[in-house]
Every structure is written in structure tokens, then in C-alpha cells.
Amino acid sequence: MVPPPRFGEVRFDSYIPDPAQPTQSDAVDALSAFAGTVGAARRRRRGWFGRRAATSGIGGSDARNSDARNSDARNSDARRSDGDGRPGVYLDGGFGVGKTHLLASLWHAAAVPAEQKTFCTFVELTNLVGALGFGPTVEALSQRRLVCIDEFELDDPGDTVLISTLLTRLVEAGVKLAATSNTLPDKLGEGRFAAEDFLREIQALAARFDVFRIDGEDYRHRGLPDAPQPLTDDEVVVLAAREDTATLDDFDALCEHLATVHPSRYGPMLDDVSRVHLRGVRTIDDQNVALRLVVLVDRLYDRDVPVVSSGVPLDRLFAEDLLAGGYRKKYFRAVSRLVSLARDGGDAALR
Image 1 (cartoon, rainbow, N blue to C red):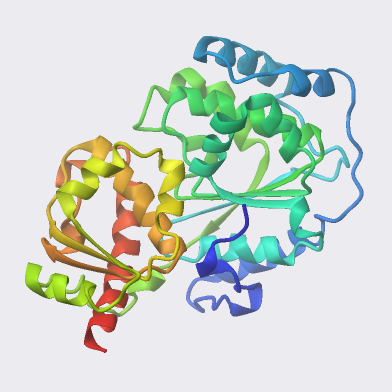
Image 2 (image 1 turned 90 degrees about the vertical axis):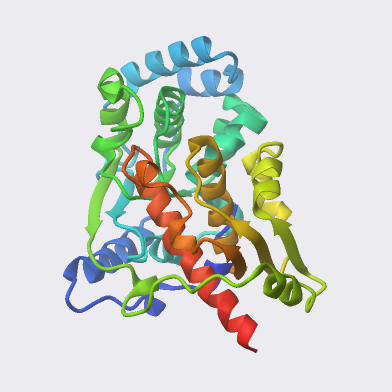
């Protein structure tokens, strides 16, 4: 759980703020200052936390939700044990303003060993709990000095209760938190589930963070043309044959395969892949399929894997009703990233 290859070498100095958007330079200053606090001495609270962390399990959803709600009720006002303010920073802004760049820069700038800090996406964090169980995850992450969570999103009530409880436990252990999202923390979950029924958990999450809004245009497409025109099926096949480490898949077959693989395995599927080639891309109107593709696109983007395709242009991957629904920010982010990867694929095709 370290910054992915695309962000392996980024630093605050390599982030170029837009002079017309002062919130961008403000965010750099705020995160630079926050990085300096990560190595500060911390004191742990003992007592019920240590016992609970050792015995809690993810269990069934009812047991998990009951345990989580009780924990949040006891700890909704918890703050960092050193008493100097909120324990986390939260970057809110549209896609393509450099939030992940800044989050990774914070991870690199924090003056503690790599094994004492964690960088993951929100999906990877929930997958970790699913793999290890709640108690072991708390125990493992409580040893960190910094936990960075990219693409923080609440998609269902279970995630809301789970993450609220997890962050409460980490704050109690003195862990510093940092997160990025397209949504303000007190608005998480809106349009996806009955968020008003979980206001206590959502407000407890919001209370963990100082929020910094980052305004600006999508840097990936600033002044650039729309998605490149798709190739023909035959052209895609010819390009795929140029590299032994390239993949070639029919789009529908890929979508069917993704349904058989846990999303936590999408990243390893791409190990040693130099370029992805897709035949017959079509517009998706099934939300389950679309959300799996969002995860795949994020992993492709993390690993800088170019994409070459035939079929519909990639900016038409998701149906209009999906782009107007509760997950629209996910879909717009995925399109932004995918179009960027398609440009990289087009450049490779010209070489």
C-alpha cells in the first residue's frame, strides 16, 4: 500500500498550481505543513480500545453495524491524542485538479519510514477489511503514523458504518489521516443510499478532517481535443500483435470476466501489461458492469497502461442515465482517466 507507479515520483514541487486558482497553491501549503506533523510524538489511549481492537471481527453485517454504531456514539468527538486540532486533512474537488498528486506528495513528504505510512484507495481499504477482518485491520493500521485514502466515497450503509468506526479507532491510536474525494465529507452518500439515516456516522467522519477545496479545470484535458477516434477491429488486432506484453480482448468478454474476479484483484491482473487493446467497445447501461469498469480504469491509470480500442469513442462508455445518477462523479472521473490513457494509446499507435 504505497503510491502507484504513476505517482511514485511526484512531490509537492512537481505540482504546478494554476495561477487562476489560488485554492491549488493553498492546498500545497496546507499539506506541506501537515506533512511536518506526521512524525510528531504521539500518545495512545489505553483501556477499551486495545481490548476491542484485539477482539473485534467483521462478522455479519448486523453485528458489524451494531458494534460500529456503538463505537461511534462513544467516540464521535474523538480528536488526535496530542490535542492540537483535527487529525486529518481532506481534499475536496472535481476530477483532474491534482488531488491524488498532492496526496501522494504528502505520503512522500512525511518524514517517517515507508512501513509506517499507508497509501490506498477507498476501495482498497474496504477490501483490506474484507480480507483481514476488522480487528486485524485496526491492529495493523494503528501501527502507522499516516494513512492516505484516495477517492474517498460512501456507496452503501455498510461502508459508512464500517469506515466511520475504523477511522475512529485509528484516531484513538494517534494515526494521522488524509483523504481525497469529489464530495464534501458531510455530503458523502447523497444520491446513493438513504444517507439521512446515517447522519451520525457521516458527521462523525466529517469531524475528523480539516477540509480544503481545490478548484480548477481537469488538467488531463485542458486545451486538448475530445477522445481520440476509435480504430477498426483489424487495426486493434495488428497493434496488439506488436508487443508480447500487450493484451487483446473483446469488450463484452472482458466485462463478463470482470464479474468473476474480485475488484481487489484487478490491479494484479495488469502486472507486466504494457498496453491494453479492446475490440467492440459499446455504451454500458448496466450499473454493476459500469462500476466494475470504473475500478479497472482506476487501476489502468495508476499503472500508466495505455488503451487502444475499437467501437464507440471512450467518452461514450457510460449511458446518459448513469452519468446523471448517484455515481456520476465516479463515471466522469473514469472517462477523464480513460480518455487520457486512450491518447497515450494513440501516441503509441503512431510510433
